[in-house]
Length: 143
View (cartoon, rainbow, N blue to C red):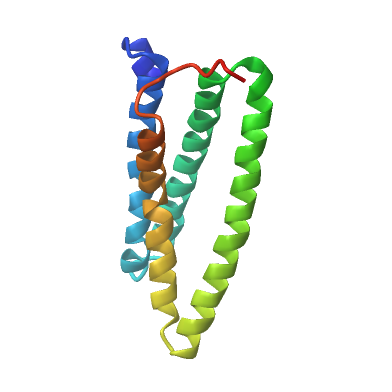
């Protein structure tokens, strides 16, 4: 709402906010290197990343209601939820295989480094994909 109140169109304001929100999870990259100082540092950094996820979710759901007619919002959100669920299954499987592989090599920390990096940059990648698919706001009316 900050950017919308500043005069941005809703889509432009949300995309600007989502870009800033997408940068916040990058602090998760510091969780492992700073974990040697205190175990609370990774806890706080991962908590910051998780709170950014919630801010991202709130904006992405509202973007759907901005772009689609009322009769289609629930269906589009449902399709997105299904995609998210399938993505969660795939990430869990890949993470398990990754951890098993690096544990067998005696370098489980490397597996965690890869997962922390993937989680940290996922929002930036998602923002780029969304901006590429929807470069300018246009209400979808032909449903």
